[in-house]
Length: 101
Length: 388
Image (cartoon, rainbow over all chains, first blue to last red; front, side, top):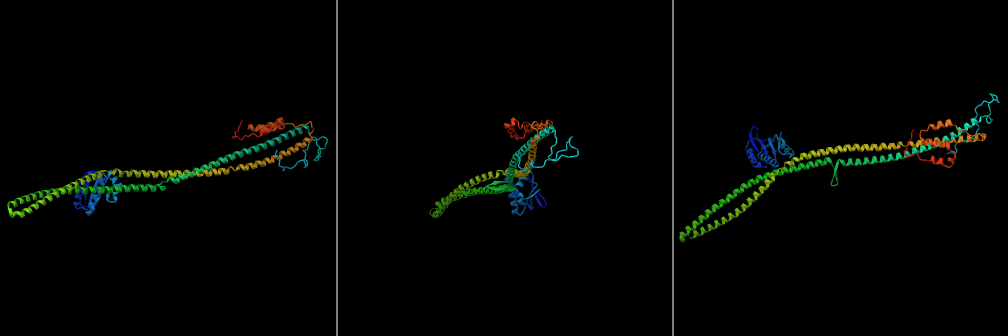
């Protein structure tokens, strides 16, 4: 997995690409730190080009949400598709994280 | 011949008025009185007697046929009623069985308790949702632990480095204490006290070195444990459970399909139960309808009684006429009439019975009882109707 960060007026947009698996845990931790340092309250993860997420990836997204909440920021998961969207739905992540189409 | 004594006895009554016959001796205008002798040709009388004989026999044969027919209808009706009742009972049993199935179809037995299918499906879906929720929570906790142990490993590496630092300091202290001891001995008596202090510092340094060694060995054990734990945890966290999570989609579809199918079966079975019940009711009405036979039997018995009275009356008249007839005159068989009568019977066995009754009765065959045996023959075996 790799990512690109784009600062906007109201939010920070992070575009995730490829596969988010356990192997990316160090990279995701670094991303979380970057997001925490960002000023915008709304931290949006654009998942439209993310092809796959495993259960560890779901765990990491939840950690990201918790870290953002602790820093009084909001995490938004946007435009999930394919396997990623199915897993998010089945895991009922919408009960915990804000999910946008 | 059955005769129940209800018929009027004809010999006591007045003689019926004889038809006006042409008579050369009597004037045309004077009518003969009842009881008066009138001339009748022997041929007319013989023909009349022949007709009377055949008529009486025909009446008897008709009575036999009526009795036989009534009995045939009765047997067949009883048999049909019996079979219909069996049919009705079976239809009812089937209806009950189907209703039982209908009652069972919408639910399954779990630990002796009937659970409705939709409730079961909802329960199972909830179970799987809980399971997935647990997987998500576990994944989250596992990743938190992975991050924690990442940090712990960094801290432990720092600790190992610190112990190395203590060793370096200790080596330097020991070296300083050694130098101090040498300098103290060079100073002689004046440095004696200082030599004791230097000796103590060396002691202290050795103890510190031993402590650092103990710490290193413990820290090494901790590092080993943490690394092992970290490896195991990585393996756990790296086990992808997303396929198991996605299995919920398949399970949900299967459950929905199962519910749909069960509902369909139930609807079909309910229709089948109604049809069976309707069948049973229809057959019961059919059995009731078979009671027409009772009425038919009573009517045929009444007709037979009338025929018996007619035959008895005919017999009386025949007997009376025979007394008046000259012995030389015998009854004349009305062949044409007989042929016409027998020609009407299309059923061969019925025709045979009539032939026997009309032509053979009173002959040697009759006296030997052959007619009775034939008349009693059962022809209701399956109702074979022979037409020609």
